[in-house]
Length: 411
Image (cartoon, rainbow, N blue to C red; front, side, top):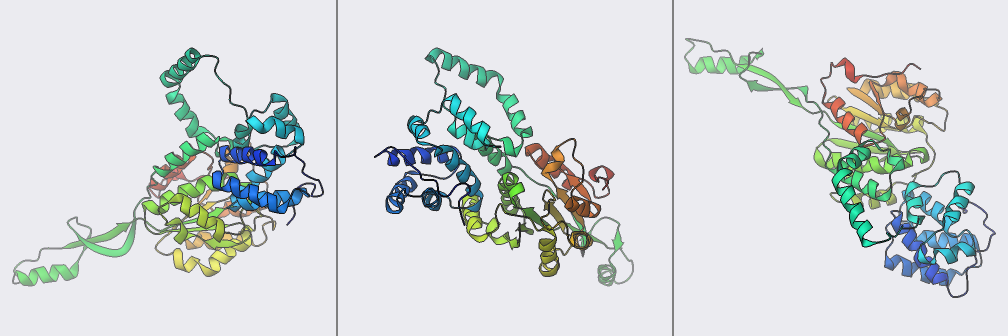
């Protein structure tokens, strides 16, 4: 692997100040949401002392080995590294974590897209002019903007959330309940309602009464919520949403039984056991070690084929409901995807496709992967904010014959 960018460029810093610069870089990563503490900063300083500052790519991978623990943290670290260590003049200005507006303007002109969390971490904190203004501002926020901020959080796109907003969203997701309607099974139980005559219980009761009279006994199907199978796309185009959706899936797994979770990028990985951990941070750390294709390409056809061949008979019994979370962009140009999605659809009770691209009003199914998937889904919904997750709960709890819950787009 090689660093993105010019690997022959030498990183230079004012003599004797590289330790302070690494400290400030660690603070920037921590403010952007990475779990960077004093211990990691000290390890980074020692590692850089051993590796030296002769080559920029050596310096990049030295810091990467210390600060990045999971695949989903790589993109944020890479962006922060290239912005923070841009040139020696910026290092001096970053000493006090106060970036001038001219720097942000320069960064915006050089980069196509900057993470919202990273931009917030690099932006200077505006100090209030007096205590009176601070108190007045706090009173205004507490009195007037509390409700509106909660409403904004419900409708704000996961990709546009700041660090604080993302943390609030994770708390809301943790308390979110996803009711799934109960369905009839083949198992029967005694009931007082006049549904199906239970001949065995009826004959036994008549024998106890001496056969003088026959009191009919009844039985009815047992109702139970079906298994829930989740197939979540973790490719690069879905990285901003898959991180938040994994919190949602973790809450689901710990709230009910018979939830099976698979993630896919270029390969299929069963993460059901990992998602059953009570601590979500422990779960994400374990996933970072177990899953090897984070933020890479997408091979939907081959991964669905793998699922149909090796897992469908194990987890799709008893009328399972499948949540398919993906943007439908396939690197293999949808080779064999139509056949595999048709097989998946026929193997489950209901196939629900959650696609963040559907949030755009002008969305059209032009990609080959989307065209191949659409004819085989029962429900097609967007998943990009908290409100969309709540809408999903309403759809899953609606009666199965409800026509309003089905949405399809013409290919």
